[in-house]
Image (tube, rainbow, N blue to C red; front, side, top):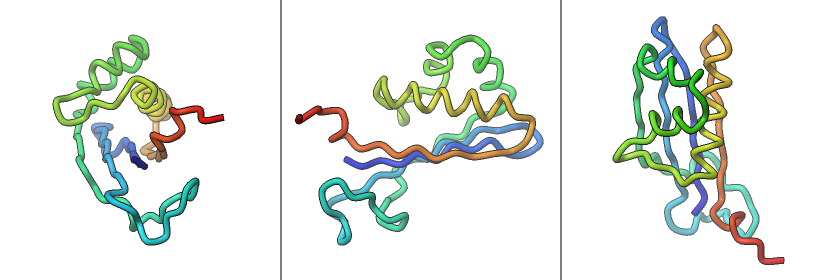
Length: 113
């Protein structure tokens, strides 16, 4: 499954928003190894975090931050959770609002060569 995560830190309170998208079914423009177009992703879930609750976790280490980010509805696998946590740490190192996007394809986890 091809997934896309958008991670943004916004507002005066530095709130964090993580949106999880996925390509559901075979997209019309999708072939093996291709990157789906933006509109071929469907929003699966959005998790909102209060900045004052999540920001302290960014300095406690990546494993602690992953624990804080995971919820019943947003529970990415280890490899992806690490990438999300690293992105969150990067966003909170900056004093400005910002966002980042992560693309992930399950097929990349299997080395077929």
